Length: 307
Image (tube, rainbow, N blue to C red; front, side):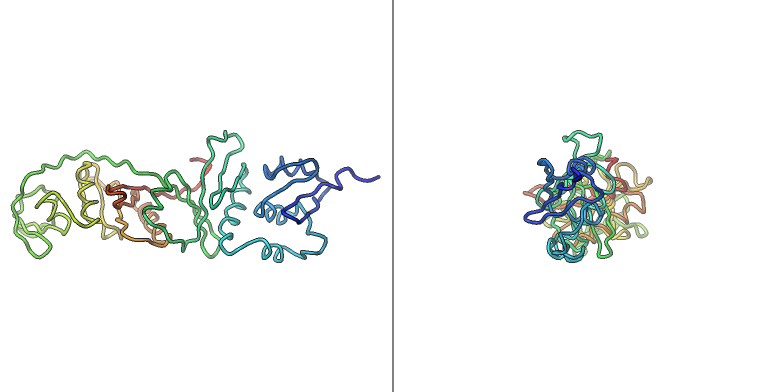
C-alpha cells in the first residue's frame, strides 16, 4: 500500500526535495514555522532549504545534486554567508523567521507579529557610516566573523541628558597654539589639565570658552554634550574621543563617546562596544547628521529574545 506521505515534498524554484522519515509537508511547515504550504508541497527560500537539508529533514534531489557542498555552491553567493549563519543560529533557538532583503525578522513562539525583532547580518569587515547607524535605529546587528562566530548588537538612538549646568560667560585665558592657558580658578574646576597653579585647555575646550562654538565635528559634539548637561573629559585612555559624566567627576563616567567622521569597518565599532562594557560604561557614537549633532548607542546583546 502506497504511503500517503510519499508524495510530500519541499520545493525551491525548479528543485524538488522529498521529505524524509515519512513526515508530511504540513509537519515541516508547522514544526519549523517556514515556507508556504500548498497541499502536499512546501515552497521555501534558499536559506530555509539549506536548513532542512542540514537537519536531514529532506533528501537530496535524486542524485542531481550529490551533497550539501554542491547545493551550497549552487544556491549561495559570498554575501549570503552571514545571513545563512545567522538564520541557522536563530532557527535553532526557535521562533518564526522571515527574510526581506538584507534583513531577518524574528518573532518568538509566544510573541505577536508586532513584537518581531529586526536583525541585520553582516561580516565583521562590513563598512558602516554614521548615516547607516542613524537609519538602523531599533535594529539588531548580527556580526559574523571569519570563524563563523556570531555576536549580536542592539542599535538605538541615544537621548542623552546630564545633571550639570555650564555657565556661559566670557572666560579669560591666553592662547598657546590650538590650546589655551588660564589660572587655576579662572574656569570651572572640571575643565583643563592642572599643572601647579595653571590650567591647560584642550583643542575642544578653548573654542567653547572663547566663543561657544566649534567648527570641526569633534568640537560640535563636545559642545552638544556640555549643553545637554554633561561634564566632558578626554576618552583617550579608552580609545575614544570623550568620557561623559551625568553628574560629578568624582563618580565614574556613564558614557564613552566616539565621534564618527568617516566610514569604518564594523570590527572597530565592536571593539569600542566591548571596551565600554569591560569598564561598565555605555558606548555612544556621535556625529553631525543633517546639520544636527546626533548620538547612537550600541550595546552587546547576549540573548536577543530578552530584548
